[in-house]
Length: 158
Image (cartoon, rainbow, N blue to C red):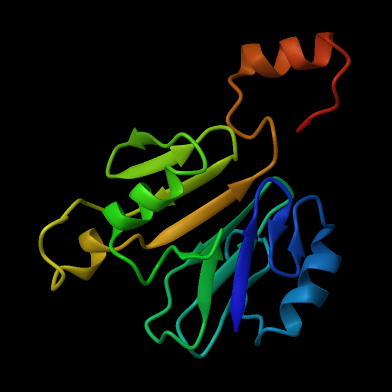
């Protein structure tokens, strides 16, 4: 199954701002919902792909089986090497290094890996991105930025 990243709106059938009940209903079509200690709806597909839905963000984890794909602008963010993903996405948006990952501030999209191993494909956790997060506007705001947004009459998250 292909999951298309649609920042800042969602991932595939999952939309940011969904109620927990709506998110659970959407996730039930994708696989069984195990208990989640953090409380938000979470599913793991047989491919290993994981999806976690919050009100302000959706996180997707890399599958171990390519039967499930995650794409943005026809770029498979988990199948291609991390630096190739960065190169291809940089054609469409600015990407800023963030530790061993990258953030596309205009898209509210974050790509993560636990460490960089850009030259060693056998080191999968560093050679490939391991998760991607799609967030609502305001997700990365500091308290001061959130206060300024509220003072300007903008609703939280937009």
